[in-house]
Image 1: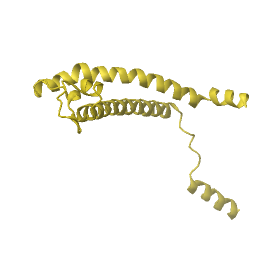
Image 2: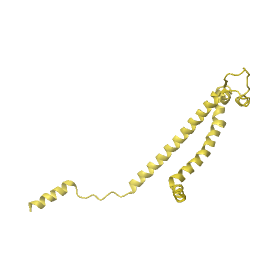
Image 3: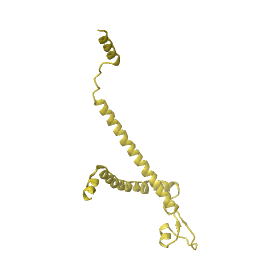
Image 4: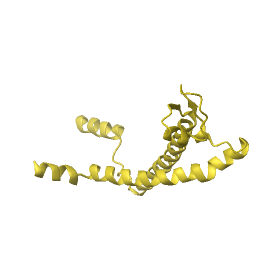
Length: 143
C-alpha cells in the first residue's frame, strides 16, 4: 500500500495540482490586496466612504446598536452580514476574471506555439494523385 501511495504522489498531475494550489493561495493574497487597497477606496469615493464590509442587520435582539460588524459578533448578536457577503462575491468575481484572462493568454500562447510548430514541419512529399494512379492502372491493363 505504501508503494501505491508513492506511485500516486509521484504522478505529474498530483504534483501539478499541488503547485496550482500553492500558487492559487499566493494569487488570492494579491487579488485581496488589489480589492482592499485599490478598488475599495475608489468605490468608497463614489459611495461617500461607505465600507461595505460593515453593512449588516442585527436579527432579533434587544435593539442595541453596534458600531461595527465585529462589535456585533463579539457581543454574540445574530447578524445578517450582507456587506461582507457582497465583498466576498466581489472578490470572487475579480479573481475569476483575472484567472479567465490568464487562461486566455496561456491558450493564445499555446495556439501560437502550435502554429509555429505546424509551419516548421515540412510538408509531406506529394505523391501521384488518385487520377495518376488510375491512369497508370488503366495503361497497365491495356498491355
